[in-house]
Every structure is written in C-alpha cells, then in structure tokens.
Length: 564
Image 1 (cartoon, rainbow, N blue to C red):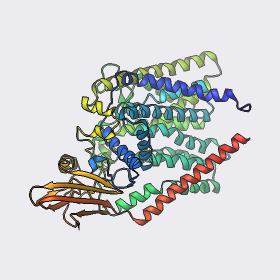
Image 2: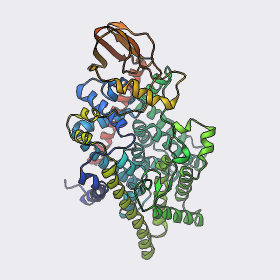
Image 3: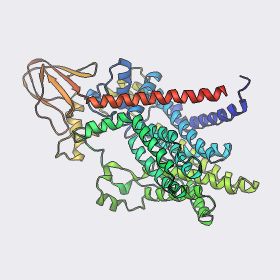
Image 4: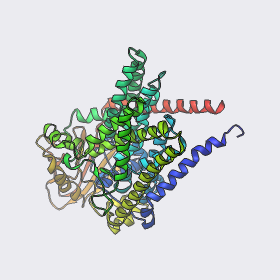
C-alpha cells in the first residue's frame, strides 16, 4: 500500500467521476420521469440480447438459431451481428434484472467508454488532463453516442471505441521506433469486430491513410509488414467465430439485406436551436452551429500552418474530408444510382461521423496544445471556445433526452413490463423486431416486401402455438381442428432441420423461409434445429482459446507492473 502513488490514482478517478456526473446530467430527464425509451432498432437489439441472456440463464447455448428471441422463430441474428457483444449484453441484462435498469446502465457504460477512450487518445498525444477531460465530454455529446442514449442506435458503440482505433493510426505516424504495436492493434480490431461489423469497416477506412503515411516514413522496413501480419493473424484467431458464421451461412444461403434508404436524405446537416423534431442538436446527422464554427476555425488554422505538425494536419484534413462525404451536400444520389447496394449496406451517410468526429476532436486538441497553451490569454480564449461548444452540446443532449423521454416512448403496458423482472414481458404486447435482416430468402425476393411478409407469416402467427426449448432445439406444439396445409411461424436456413410429427420435413417454404407443412387433426409437434458445420466448432474453440491466452498474458503483464 505504501508504494501506491495516490496522486496518480486520484488523477484517474476524478476524471471518471466527472464523466459519471456529466452522463447523469445527459440522461437526467429519463431518470426523473423513469421511462423506457425506444428507437427504430431498439427492440431488434433487445430481442438479440434477450436471446443471449436466456441462453446463459438456461444453459441452452445455440450460437446460430434464436430459440428465445424474435418470437422464438429460429432466426439467425447474433452469429452475424456482434456475437461476443451480444452475449456480454445478455449477461448484463441478467445482472440488472429489468430492461429499464439495463437501458440506464448501458447509457452510463457507453458514455464512460467513449469519454475514457477519447481521453486515452488525447493524452497519448500529450494533451493535458483538464483539456482532455473537456474534449472527451464534448465527444460523448456529439454524433452517435447521444443517439444511442435516446434511440439506441448501435453505431454509438462504434463511436465509443473508435478513439482507440485512431490511437493505433496516430501511433503509425508518431512512434518512430515501433509504429505498429501488433498486440494493441490486434486487440482493438478484435473487440470492434465482436461489437459491430459496420463499425469494423469504418475502422479499416480510418486506418488506411495512417498506414500509407507510415509506409512512406519507414520505407523498406520489413518489421512494419511483419507486425501488421501478426496483428491480422491474431485478429483472425480472436474473431474466428465471426468469420466462421459468415462462411457457414453465406456459402449456402441467400440472406435478406437490411432495409434500403435514400442516401440523399441521410447526410449530416446543420441543426438549429428551436423545436425538437428534425433538429435533434448533435444527435446522429445533426451538427450544432458552435461545433461547426470550431471545426471551421480548426480548418483555417491548419491551412495557415500546414507543415507545423504531421499528425494534426493528417487528422484534420482527413476528418474534414470524411465529414464532407457524410454531409447532405455530397452527391449521394449519383453514388446510389451507380452502386444500388449502398442503400441497404450503408443506409445513412451520417454514420461516417463515427470516424470524422474522433479525427476532428483530436485535431482541435492538438492545435490548442501546440499553439495556445503557452500564452495565458490564448489558452483562456481557446478553452472558452471549447467550453461554449461543450455547453451547447450538453444543453442539446439534455433537451433531446427530454423530448424522447416525453414523446418518444412506448405504451404504458410496455413501460410496466420494462420494470418487471420477467424479461419476456416486454415482447408480449406488441410485435417487435420486424426487420427481415439475415432471413434465408428465395431467389426472386423483393427486399421491400420482406418485412411485411415476415410480419404476416411469422410474427402474427404465433398464437395457438406452445414453444419449448430442449438444449439447442426449438419445439412447437399445437392442436388442430382439422388436417390441412399451414405455414409454421418459423424460419429455416439450408442448415436447418425440421421434424414434423416425427417425420423429417423436405417440403416447400415461403419466400422468407417459413415451412409449409401438412398438419393432422389433433396434437401436432415440430422440432427445429440448426446443423452447425464441424469446422465452425473448431473456429469457435480457436476464438475461445485465443481470448483465454490473451487474458492470461494481460494479467501476467499487469502482475509484473505491480511487483515492480
């Protein structure tokens, strides 16, 4: 205990106490009213995490087939959509016991993660602690993090983790001796792959220019390629379960794509101060005037001091390019005409702020450190500018939270269910999770019609069936007044096996993969299971063993630090 430097401990603790206090202010309207808020994808993700939670609770693990979530339809979701993070959220859900508690806790977690990673990035480039804390608070009040708080947009977790990705990129330029720390890069990329695939693609886009500059600085340095290869190989091992799932499903199924949106309508635009609807402050694709003004000042400074600092110039110029591409002024209409798949793959151009904002916040911090901290009046003016943008963004976040907590909630029945310890009750009163993502569909399917067909043939046909789970098998039982052909409220994939009344099903399926069977008069049963390829189990164990080895190595390194 005598060797513990309490000043250093307090130096870490006070900043996180500030982050907790600010987060409390951000979500105070929801805490005060005590409501469960929802967004477009809120119940889609709730169904994912509920399925993972019930697997853990009942010890009935099914990596592919959803036996508890999505109205117990047998859909495959978590295997393709951040599987590791899904199980982590399932565990959190079990620990906090209600959906309302889960929502509040994850609001705190995403803000602490986003602020903590940004502070880590800023201190890596030697920005002092108070300024790092200010900029970190600004960071969690812009873009997708406040959007997660109010509408549970999953890109928020990508934004919260992205500063660590950027740290790896900055290191490629800044660290002359070891530009690529392969363990650091491997862990950072592996975690984001286990969280969100789209954010992973953005992370790769973020790193590309830094790696190119790194190659220009360290010409003919084989060690860079060796370290990069180690990082890639290690990442493949730590995320083998993700790639194995994609290989298993996409190699033998035609999977439905996410809903398509007009990209021209989803760009970043200037937000106003009046009203709520359409002007959600800094949420998602909205940027407030003072924040934009701060970015413009940063751009002017870099143009006038282009050669002052390579890292600052790189992050600012690249951040501005990404922000411009993410805006409504970029010709997204042309892009979606040439590449129609972008309408469903990308959906909203403003998602690029997940990489634009970390770049620009870092640039602003570097400009202040390099040019204004040495002279008191310059230091105070720069902090005042940041402070005004910070106040503007916090007020906007609180105002938006107030709006969502008052006008963008769910029914009173669901509100009561959100505070019930029976986690399934929240799905009882309304049909949720209507998106047809990742359903195994026919060759002639029309993306726009899949949601309606899935709603009609699966979600609204659940009444009259009793659901049971036996290990990793989903069992349906029902009584019929007469024998006839019916469509079971299940979805099947090429690997799915269905036994109806003791006989293997090999019949027809509708366009969303629901089996059309012949029921008999009286008692009927259907057993749905998913035949997992043998190679996937190998890849899953590779993933588990890799994370265990990494954890042991990490604990060993921490132990060495303490003993020294």
